[in-house]
Amino acid sequence: MGYTGCGMNVDFLIIGQGLAGSTLAVELLKRGRSVLVVDRQDGTGSTRIAAGLITPLTGKGMNPAWRQQHYLPKAVAFYHALEKESGRKLYHSTPVVRVFASERERDKWRGKKGELGQWAHELPELEGPFQNEFGGIEMPDGAWLDTLTFLHVVQDKLMDAGSWREAAFAEQDVSFVDGKVKWQDVVADKVILCQGAYGLKGVDGYQGWFSHVHHRSAKGEILNVWIDELDEARRYHCNGWLAPREGGMWKAGANYDWKNMDAIPSDAGRSDVLNKLNTWVKLGDGKDVPMEVIGHEAGIRPIVRNSMPVVGFHPEMAEVGFFNGLGSKGSLMAPAVAEHFAAHLSGECDLDDELKLVQPG
Image (tube, rainbow, N blue to C red; front, side, top):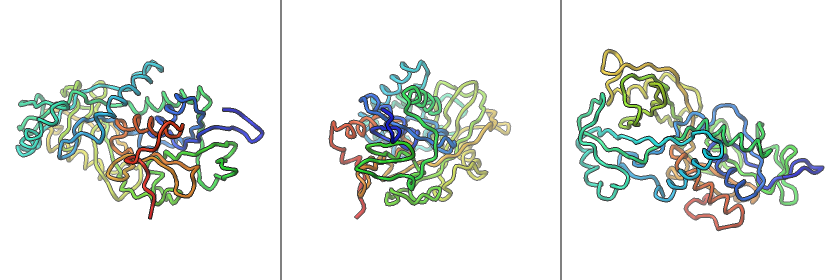
C-alpha cells in the first residue's frame, strides 16, 4: 500500500465490514494483498446484531447446511486463528438441543439418523421446562460466533495495517480510469461490494450496480432476555431458539418479515418471537421459568439464490466485484467462501461455478 500524488493506492477497495467484507479482507491480507475496507458504522448491518449461530442440522428436514462437511472445519480454523492472534474469545462451542415439536418430527429424525448420525444423537428425555414430550436431538458441533467482538477484532487488525476507514460510500462517487477504480483519494485495481442486504435492490432504496441480482431478503428480530433456571451449557431450538450468553442472559429469536425492509424493532416482531417461545418453553406468568425482556434488536438478512452465498463480478464492469447472500448461515460459510474468493482475486484459481454470480439474460 502506498501514497502517490493521487492518494492511496491499493489492490482492493472493500465496501462493508460485515462478515463478508471482514473475512475477505483477512484472507486477502494473508496473501500479501493491500486492501482498504470502508464501513459507514451506522449500526444497521445484520452482522452487528446477529446471534452468529452455527447449527449442524436445521429446518423442518433437519438437514446439514450446503457444503457443511467442508465449510465447518474451515470456519473453526479461521476463528481460532483470529482468537490466537488477538487474544480475544470469538468462537464458543455450545451443544445444540433440538426439541421435537411432534411425534411426526421424531419419526422423521429416526428415519434419517443413519445418514445424519455424525451430526446429532437422540435424547429420549429432555431436562428442562419444555412443554413438548417427544424428546429431541443433541448436536455436539453447535457453536456461536460473538459477531460484535469478531467485527472489533477485524477492525483493529485492519486499522493496524492502515486498511480501514469510516465513511459513507456511494456508487456515483466512483470513476473508472485506465482500468482502475477511483473513489475519493483512493485508487484500486478492483472495488468489491460486501454490503449485505443494503447492496440489494429495493433495500433502503438501493438501485445500483447489482440491482439485477434477485433476492428475497428478510427482516429478523431478536430479543435479549433474562431467564432463570435454564441450563446455560446448551442452546435450544424448536419453534424459534434460545441461545445462552452469560449471567442468565439469552438471545431469543427469530422471526422472518418479508415486507418491512428496515432495521427498526417492532412490537409485532417482539410478539412473534415471544409467541413462538411460548409454544415449547414454559416461560413467565407464573409458569416454570421466569423471564424478562431486556433488549430488542432487528436486522435484515441478505438472502440470495436459495440461501447460498454468491461471489462474482458485474457483467459490464470487470473492476466491480460482489460478495453477498450469506443469510442466516453466514458465520458458518463466510470463511471458506472468502478464502476461495480471495484465492481467485489473487489469480490462484478459477471462480467456483456453484458460487458464481449468475449474470442476467
